[in-house]
Image 1 (cartoon, rainbow, N blue to C red):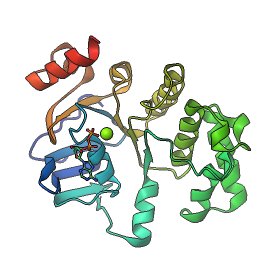
Image 2: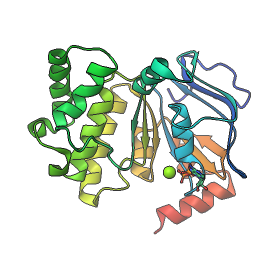
Image 3: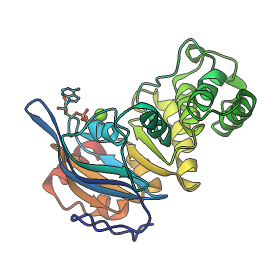
Amino acid sequence: MSEVSVTKDATPVADALVVLNNVNKHFGALHVLQDIDLTIARGEVVVVIGPSGSGKSTLCRTINRLETTDSGTISIDGKPLPQEGRELARLRADVGMVFQSFNLFAHKTVLENVTLGQVKVRKTDRKTAETKARSLLDRVGVGAQADKYPAQLSGGQQQRVAIARALAMDPKVMLFDEPTSALDPEMINEVLEVMRQLAADGMTMVVVTHEMGFARSAANRVVFMADGKIVEEARPDQFFANPRSDRAKDFLSKILHH
Ligand SMILES: Nc1ncnc2c1ncn2[C@@H]1O[C@H](COP(=O)(O)OP(=O)(O)O)[C@@H](O)[C@H]1O
Ligand SMILES: [Mg+2]
């Protein structure tokens, strides 16, 4: 995986799954994504880091079309992102997303949270969907909580349910936007451990995180963003040992020595 080469002119990468080509986005006068070229190979784990406000969340949100773009193209598995309707719902299922806030349905049980999308979007029959939901809940270590409501679970448990819910759709790629930032410290590892396992199982993942230990141990590539641009990208060992840009050096000195 580590020898997958990504070039600025978007030369095809072997087995590319997510391809962003010259993507630009503005929020009013703010040029929040600037000429973004990023190709993610099947099975690759990309960790995106950078200062607050650099466009990391917006980047994730454009990949499942929670945000539109102004120019450039994004494709998943060779197909451009659909604009609307049923195709868009399917895209959102293919691109699983886990947010900082857990975003579970508060008035549905844990089991229902992980069953619902399978029935509605994937048209799986309820019994099959529930069986799969239980097996995924076991896999992320919260099988015993299946009949509870989200508010009855700890933050770490809720986030693992959110991961199971996304996985239930058999996504092609999983996006994680600071999945542990809202958690109490003692719950961070139980979520990172589930993500590490997922990475080891071959899931294609884009992970925005400040957890540098995770980046070192699980990422194939680190992408460093600042001011709406990809400033630098490298293998984690190279990036942490020898960041090339001043922006990255400055950022790392702030987060590694506080
Ligand atoms: N919906 C929005 N409307 C206007 N500005 C936004 C919106 N979402 C984000 N921004 C701005 O875009 C910039 C990048 O935001 P974001 O992608 O959330 O950065 P990050 O996730 O790296 O902290 C920030 O300056 C933010 O204030
Ligand atoms: Mg963000």
